[in-house]
Length: 115
Image (cartoon, rainbow, N blue to C red):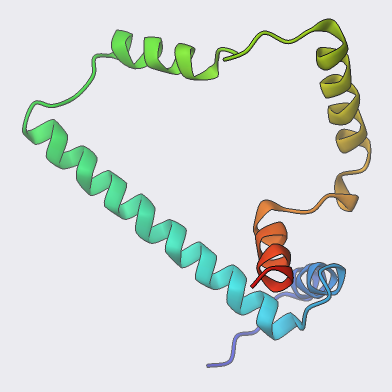
């Protein structure tokens, strides 16, 4: 199969592959594979949700809101120095986004280093 990309997208893909020390073809195959895996998970989650709804097994809007609130609430209290360090790191990330590494890229690197 041959796929043609818009030149801007092709440049971005090549740049990312180079940043990760990978060949563009290999990188694009991994990106597409991850996308399809995520798409499969999403479709399965929707099907499970539809089945739950049909069987009457669902949360009210209030219950869902409570669960989200608990999920996003800090699990452990942070000290002021910890909070300041997190803010510093977030600010560094915001100013240097292109220097960051995605979780997917980090997993690939770790798998190569620790087979």
